[in-house]
Length: 119
Image (cartoon, rainbow, N blue to C red; front, side, top):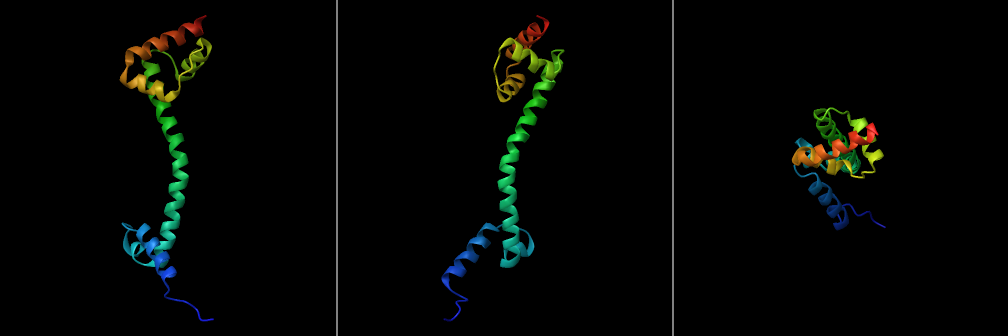
């Protein structure tokens, strides 16, 4: 059986890879061999970083909460400890939003956390 070297399957596969490599610099967007490597690496990074993004946002929220807590005269770890003792279950995303947008509500929560630590 003869070998198919310019069939539609091969062309379509190469076209798909080159389409994914659109916008890459140099030969990486036009040369199939280099584009294949670049696309493989790019897709791997995209997959990995979709998971890493969740941790990045959690770190950002903790930084924002910590800054607001220190303005209230309490550290982040003591604040979280006070929340758990007070029985307040609110996630870090919501706390970070309150810290930046609704400072009055955050101050009230911080006061309850501080009171729970003192008791």
